[in-house]
Amino acid sequence: MDSVIMILLVAIPVILAITVHEACHGLVAFQLGDPTAKSQGRLTLNPIKHIDPIGTVVVPLVLYAIGGFMFGWAKPVPVDTRYFKSPSVDMALVAAAGPMSNLLMAIAWALLLSFGGDSPMLAAMAKAGVMINLVLFALNVLPIPPLDGSKIVAHFLPGDIRRGYEGIERYGLIILLVLMATGVLSTVLLPMVNGMGELLAKLVGL
Image (cartoon, rainbow, N blue to C red; front, top):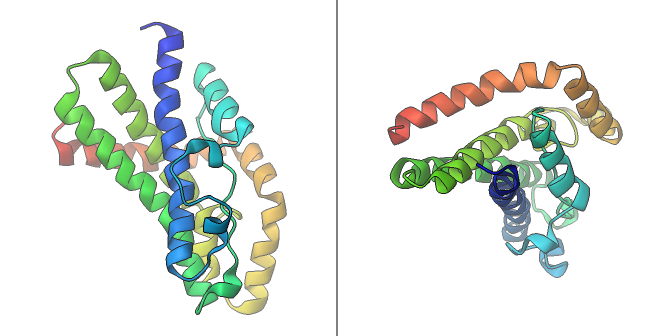
């Protein structure tokens, strides 16, 4: 299959995965009382509202082209915890909404592959959709600030420890890049992604 066509087929599930991930953060926050995301037009599946040109498009496609471990990011949805009745619990729920959306999308792509995989192009897109969403799920549940998993972990930490833990967020991207460059990130994530992929394949009959 032509490499340009393959990149376009991969771009579609990448953009969809990251867009839905961020929209779900905003939707759950809104349901819990925070109107910030809605007021900024982020409760939408319009990718233009969520795309970070570098993190959503350039980084994933470059990593895909060079055969690296693919990941990306979108513009974070703004959340104001002052609107929440139970800030710690509600923030954990908002954080969990993103990776859970990726898990559900991985299941949807797997079902599409199972029932509509006769078309080579559709099969390629569906396979990419499964892998991208499983990677985003596994990546985002890691307890590294500012990833979603860190906000879930923070809920269970006492005050002083939580504040110190959350302070790591300013170095989060650097930590992730170092882990990726050294191969530690792929060593941690690949067994998770492969295990979930095998389980998913059995569930949908692939």
